[in-house]
Image (cartoon, helix red, strand yellow):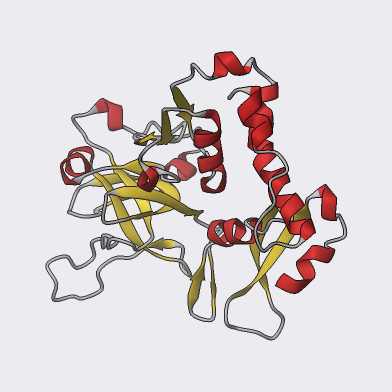
Length: 273
């Protein structure tokens, strides 16, 4: 991004916002722009593809639009995993932003990736309990818009899908689930909850163990962190569940926040609390 473009975005007021919030919002936007100070802006303008994982949804637009990156290739994978998913997001494709992967029906069938319905209280995939069902004892696939654990098939004839395990045999056994969607099959458990929309886009929901239950509802620490962190005066938020003495309705939601320096005492947060 050229210096002119960078400076043009500095100190823009936020309509309807208090002075402290406007200044904080400006600071947040500049966080991404300030990366241009590390490199020669004229050279950075030639970058047409950014590849990586973990680009947070709340900064995706500022990054791709601010630097004018034509395509962002976001991927999801694990060092010990046996598969991955990708999302090639063109700068004109607004729907693809913030997503970690995309698979249509054909690709989904070919890869063998599935989202299994998940029981947060037991921390395990849900199996069909109806003894009269032909799928009795097998896992249930999550519906569109429903969070589920990503499972990747271990195919006997395809060595690229094999899970070689850890040095700890018991830990290795826990990562593979058998008789998942049909008798005799095997799937690698990623330990991550994802959700798939009607367009085939996959979004990260939470790491299993981080999501918790409260009064019959599922609480995603990632989603709450993003919501809390979207406030103009909050630099970063970390959310987790805590046990509430005398309450059996699950875990309460606790948030640890880091404020931007221009409102170090959090006075601007008072109206939002």
